[in-house]
Amino acid sequence: MRVDYHVHALGHLEYTHSQNHLRDIFQAAEKAGLQEIGLADHDEYADHFQLSVIRKTAADYPALQVRQGVEVDYRPERETEIRRLLSSFPYDYAIGSVHSVDEWPFDHPDYRDGYHRWDVDELYKAYYEAVAQAAQSGLFDIIGHLDLIKVFGFRPVRNRISLAQPALESIRDNELCVEINSNGWYKPVQEVYPEETLIAVCIDMGIPLTTGSDAHSPQHVGRDLNRIEDLLCRLGAGTLTVFQKRSPRSVGIGPE
Image (cartoon, rainbow, N blue to C red; front, side, top):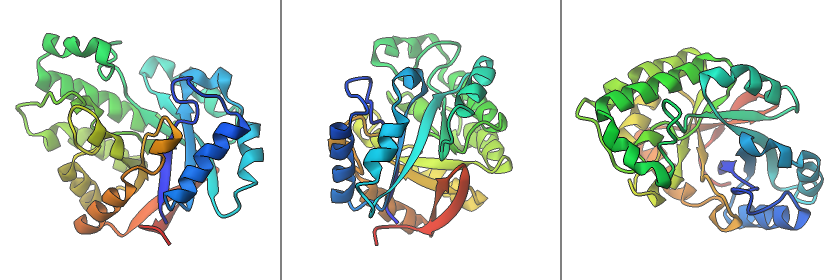
C-alpha cells in the first residue's frame, strides 16, 4: 500500500473540515496513488475538528481508506490533558511529536535564534529525552518526525545515533511506530525525517515504520512518498504499519 498518515486537513487554520475542502484532499490522495490516508490535525485546533464531516465525506471515496488521527504536541505536563483528548473520540491512531524544548518552540522560524543559546549536543540530548518520555507515556501509536530537532541544520558534535539511542530503545520497548516524513526535504535541512542512518537503525531494531507527507494543503498530499518507498526498499524494509481503532497491522510497501 501507499500510505500518507500525516495530513493536516486544517493546515494552520487556513482551512476548515468542509466537504469541499475534504474532497480536494481525497481527490489529491487518489491522484497520488494512495490506498490509505490519515487525517491528523494538530491537537491545538481540536475545537475546530469536524470529525463527523470527515466520516460523511469519506464515504464518497470507497477506494480510499480514510483514517482519523491526531498529531499531539507532547510535553510531560500535558499528559492528563492529552489522555482526555484521546478518549474523546475513537481515533485510529495518535502521533506524538516533540516541537519544543524547555518551552522553546525550536522548529518555528521566528524562534530560530534560540539554537545559539544552546550547546547543540545538550540540545539534542534534551530533545531525545523528551521523545523517549513521549514513547513511555503510553499515549501514542506513532512518533512523528523523529529527528525534527535538525530542522534548521544545526548538528551535534557527538554521534547522532548515540544521542538518539535512548529514544529509539524507548520506542521499541513500548511498541511504537516511527514515521518516515518527506517534509524534511522541504525544510532548511533538506533531509528526510529521520535521516537515512536512523531509518536503518530502526529497521535493524525491528521498529515498525509508517509514512507521511506532513501536508498542510491538498497539493502536498502524498508528496515524495515514492522517494520514501524507494529508500525503504533499498534499506531492506519490506512493510509499513497502518492502524484502525489504535490497532496496528503490517502491509507491503508501495502502490497497488
